[in-house]
Length: 426
Ligand code: LLP
Image 1 (cartoon, rainbow, N blue to C red):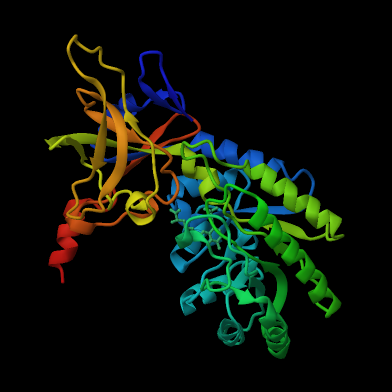
Image 2 (cartoon, rainbow, N blue to C red; image 1 turned 30 degrees about the vertical axis):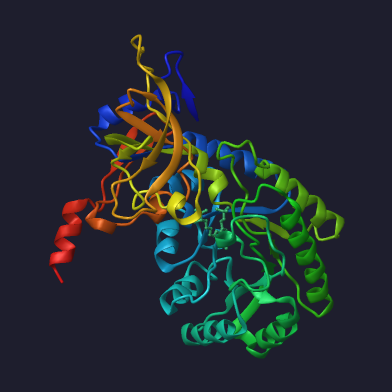
């Protein structure tokens, strides 16, 4: 949890952010994560299910740091993974095979093999994205002499009210199987005999949902489909309502994840399907608010009335503003500097990074003049480091983890020297 001391200094998880950076000797840009707050978030969501059979499968793509995944595993989460590498991170972080789901389109043979081969009976479910994929998975189960547990990812043809890049449940999205094609998918599963067993249905209608309507409409569609499948002879163990719970990026707009859960639980029970495991796949809502990016102001430029503040963090460190026009509040690390008489006070600054692109801009923010030496960029615990790159020969940012016990750990993977060595090794 981010908080402020009376003098304005920023604290994360009860510790001064500046002192955290000093203690580990970290330069900027550096992500800092509050693992205790992530664990609390996860425990609250798991507890909100009461006694109902559930799986809160953390979407590892949001933040794949081992420290984060281990923390969430201990807090009661399973994992939703999208690749072999994410599956390995989840497995080695302590998530058991039967608490894992593999989703995504174009799954590699290696990922499918790992999913089928994991544990005593493979992972909980491979979320199948197309009828073609069913055949590919069945071929691998036969090769491995096992039965693959599959769930069909339904495209409910529902457009969620979110950024178009992260709405995934409408008819022209690339994901999932349209309702009209489900009977054919079911016939294809049965035609594969022992190679495949259908264990559930699922959907993921979009990300950063700040209203419940699309999520609940999707839930209603899934529950109707479960009945249809069961009338057709299937016996489903799980219903996966997907992730997508939005967080408050500063405009006050969000719905508590437990309210999404309460809604789907009530609908599942009303549909007479309370015996099924209810799965949700939150990524952002468990981790997003509990990470910030600390950056230094390295230059300023005032040109024809425009004020630019240049940070040492850029779009390679945090892509969301450039890619989606996302706003992440930028604030001084503090404490506030007492202003001398005659100084102009707060000004609007266009805050940019050092990368050679005009889209390397975080937006316009009000900052005190003189500018603080360091700022923090808020709510970057999800899809922050996860989407970072080495563009422009820039090293990946440092990551600092504040553990539940108060210990700090640091990761400096992929610095600029690693990049130089790799580029020269070609
Ligand atoms: N399940 C599936 C199948 C998904 O594709 C995703 C996210 C999730 C769960 C988790 O969604 P969440 O609870 O985190 O919203 N890079 C974008 C977000 C992309 C989301 C991709 N899929 C961003 O920075 O907003």
